[in-house]
Length: 110
Length: 305
Image (cartoon, rainbow over all chains, first blue to last red; front, top):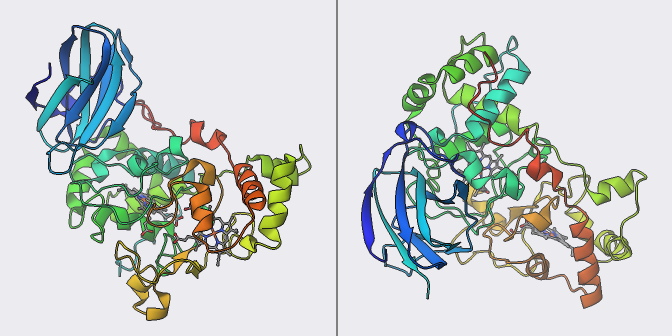
């Protein structure tokens, strides 16, 4: 939590999504599923250096995003989406990325 | 110029229904872009009245977009197509612009016709749909059949279920502000001279009185293709159907609100008239088209068994 991690994504046809992603991507795109823990309920930001579609899944349901935007110029962050999340272990579902490699960061919004 | 013959893949034996079903699948398929990230629907999202709510959508590798994504409702009634190209007369020709165009790069598939065929033919449903849609071509998968199917689907995107349509066909009258707004729109303000007819567009190219010939983003409008200096800054009149759902506005998305877009015309309106005109434009909204399941992404189950 709070640190960037380098995700290795799988070809879309090999990914078993929990929910149909908002944007699934073609067979030549990449995606993946990652669990993450939220210790304290609140607003969290998911930032990435790609343009993949992100779904956060809590108790089997996609959480509606609370805000989105671009990262600061030259930060390498191309997309940020914020969610209001309860505490617990949740799923981050990534879809329709153009490459297998993606850097993702989940951090609390102060 | 695009290959002659594009848009000529009319297959008389083909089933129109199969072409539409195929076109819908293709419209929502990321495999039409080089890295699988962009489908037509990424930019033309049915839930946003086939626009996307951003100024200009980047291409598959993040190439900067140049123009604002237009809605596609009733696009089958439009020719020429796009903001600034009088040579793009058919949907079949236009589809190849996002797929294989380079100015700007959108889906990035120039020279990738064989790769597109490889991807699509790996899918059994596509093989069946192409065969049913294009029997004479024996289900061939190429840019011509893909663009023909996309065009067939886009011609089904029809939207005339607005409060204004109901009022003009004898249904409930419009709210008074909208009635006043329509009078301003058709009268003194002269909006209807360009936003004319049932689709609120003359499909002609105009430069707004308040706008420069060379836009800040370097887009010369119709002059980009015609090369004529008098065409600088001229853009095709957009339809105003569902305009309330498709902000931001103008060819470069530089007007955040309808009010901003109207002010940029350089037509003086009193604040009261401006508010009434907006009430009228709101009456051109059809939300049914945004939730119509016939346009949504199809499920995994193939239309043909």
